[in-house]
Image 1: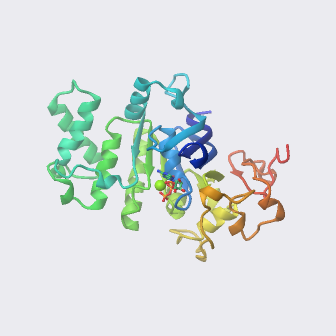
Image 2: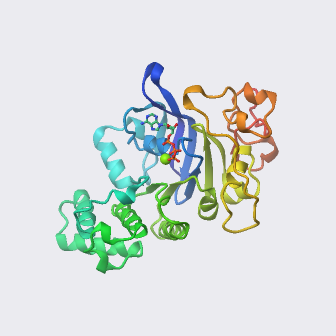
Image 3: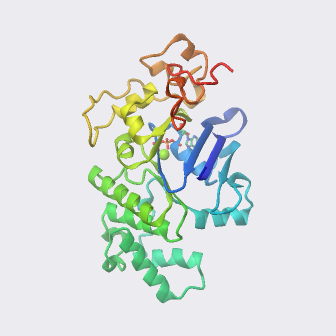
Length: 335
Ligand code: ATP
Ligand code: MG
């Protein structure tokens, strides 16, 4: 296997003891080298919590209450990110993974020029570099993300939202990370700009060879740009498939509903129906499958037993497809 990150049994809670709510539940997820993995789900499904959790950047009161996150360095032994000491974690965050957070484009410092902000990142990573080499590298990074060098001396407010987002991506790439996590970096931008940025990221991924976790609630973007897609609902992953399979043949009724909530960018038109009802309240999760109260196909069992995420018997030729739904019994069902 050529995994770069393996998440196993990850649980993340907000708060402690009786006040705790579980926002990520028993998540297993593998990121392969060089792939774009899309993570989709409605607001509150736990996408950001998962992303923060696997890099240990959870803001309080978030706590990881179980699981492991194995990082496979090039040619080295896997290490559990959740058990790294401070120094190793720092290195991992800086040099191995880069995260562009939700709303990141507003996190550029308004009082500093773009050049200063880029060179500061490079300097923090490599304090002995010369200022000339840092500036050259800053220019190169802007070029990578499609911004001309004459923007180096601009202040953030002089750039469009899309350009600020590109600058953030350039910063994230400054340290040549192996994994880039983008948390809905484009929601504040219009759809055309979103697609341009995502396309550029996919191209850079091919040239620079990093892996991408791209988080959004807009599944149509993911269908177009990711290799594989994982769908989250109520803190769990309910389906995983390669993007084309998921689009053609979604197994989980929630995935189906999500696909029909956004206009398709290409391929056959789907009728936009959306999903009736609203996401579950983490404080009082429905019994059984947490989607059952909204599910058009719910059966008696669905309100009683939590479905296992596994390869459905009917798709057993495809080990890369998993779903957690009683409509699609899996091999170890009932064990
Ligand atoms: P969005 O699409 O809106 O970004 P998301 O899928 O990223 O949503 P999260 O932000 O991970 O969802 O939130 C998952 C759940 O955890 C939500 O129910 C949210 O209310 C809860 N949550 C998030 N942050 C906190 C917090 N600081 N304290 C308590 N609960 C939180
Ligand atoms: Mg989020």
